[in-house]
Image 1 (cartoon, rainbow, N blue to C red):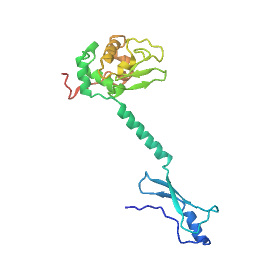
Image 2 (tube, rainbow, N blue to C red):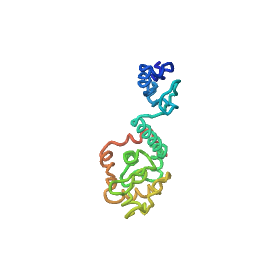
Image 3 (cartoon, rainbow, N blue to C red):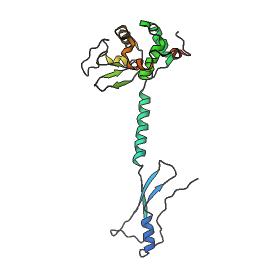
Image 4 (tube, rainbow, N blue to C red):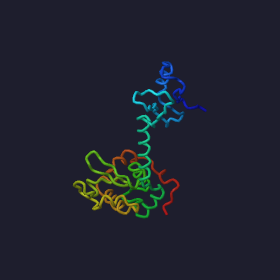
Length: 215
């Protein structure tokens, strides 16, 4: 086991001892424990106005983690907060809800199509909200757009689904399902989702239902 590398100034050297003075100056350094999280900046404290002292001097240390360490810690906290706020739904639970609401085979799309879409759009996150470059937002597990499908009252919306965008974040999925039915019933069907065209269309998708029961 490694020991601390911090050395305290000598208490026996005199004012006239130039070697002792030099040694004290060289020992005003960083104290680093073996743990990468412990960084101490140490300095001597003097009580006289001249800065000289004939007796032992106190060592003052303050915790000062490097900038990179602080950045990593802040990133970790942000990730933990994001994970805590996400409302995820189990793949098979989602399949049962979609089956109950008659999406299995709706407009020719299977439950596997819907599960693949939910995964590539939100990773099964019911509460996901994403801002786009044009200022619009995508809401919910299927990332429904605010400029065309729902109204978030932040900008002009065609609101084809006649839904409040916040309702698309509801865990019961009823508003979301009503909206996606309108989307796939219109021109383009599921091709309205770019992620579905890129990652789901024309591919074998039956594995998405592996281990799941519709009832």
